[in-house]
Length: 105
Image (cartoon, rainbow, N blue to C red; front, top):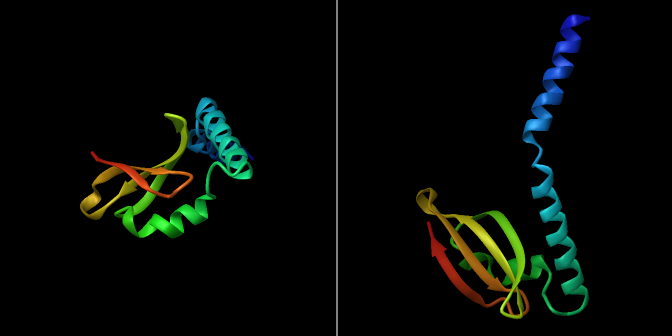
């Protein structure tokens, strides 16, 4: 019985450690809602369409995504791991799928 309790406690601790902190989850949920509303209003293209248009130009595997508004327009901001493990950020206009900026880290 003690062994089962210890395993359960360990599983709960590991799950808690792997879950994003509450503020990060709230921010992610807010961004998701903003994106959904912007797509519904015709102010942004859906993410699958953006990826179909520019996915090959991102330069690697997408490992992170933000959706934000800047200078009066919606932007998808992709974090991308390229060849050799190089991390970059690629900003894409959410309405036109035009790549606006690419920053390497």
